[in-house]
Image (cartoon, rainbow, N blue to C red; front, side, top):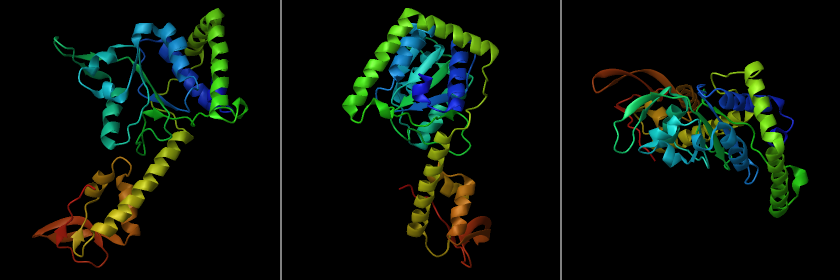
Amino acid sequence: MEKLWFPNKPKEVDIFTDWLSLVVTFPDCRTRWTPVLRSVHGIGKGTLVQEVLRPLLGAHTVKEVNYKRTVGAFSGELFLNRLIVMNEVEATSPEQYNRLKTIVSDDYHFVERKGEQAFDAKMTFATLMFSNKEKPLTIPKGDRRYWLPDFIEYPAIWGETDAEQQATAAEFFGYWRTALAEGGLKELAIFLRWLALNRAEMHDTAPRSDGKDNIVSNRTEDASDKLVIYLQAMWHKGDGYKVSDLQSLFSPSLSDTDVKRVLTDQGFAAGRHSIAGKQMRCWAKVGDVVNSLHTPQFR
């Protein structure tokens, strides 16, 4: 599987197998970051869950859910399991990112069950996310919760058409499931336990990856362009701007530093201005006299 998902990428192999070994071996080990595996359809994500993770962790302690179920009412009971697998992840707004980040990394969650007294509980579950989208998440600079390896494609030798690739995939995973049933699963369990006890690296935060860097970079560039368009459309002579107000329009894609860079490039400068009889620090066009503070307008 590692040669299929991470071909010629030994660092990505080590990161994922280390994470997997720790999750399988130590039920009370809380990993505060999650792998996000992006791929084409039929590349074995479901096989991993059904044929490996459920047998090794316990069928009833692995929950497969979507985003809505994870953040919805009475979702706290999910967090009492060993592993939460989120399928078809697509959380592209800052609000969705903020709701997910606490689930992934917080040590305590509020557990609310229908007809029972709610309570706080210490969390030990791990999370694993799957998506068929190239950019399934809005990820800000400095994120420490998500590890995204490169997008997983079918090997070139599996065929040129979708039908050929899917047929080869079905044959490959058929052989793999047979090997697991004939003793391979036991061997895998022994290997993962050995790895966790002897060599696995426990990362406190998500390791760096080119896959995530590309998403963050692209989103920052896109948001910067949108901010330029916003300023050009909304600016009026005498307007002053607060960096925090502009940043709130594009959070988490743009940091305060990104906003200041765009403002500088567009001919704005920071300074103290008298607005309605009060001294305020804000950004304005160079040489402009500020008479009002711009109110952000969500578009």
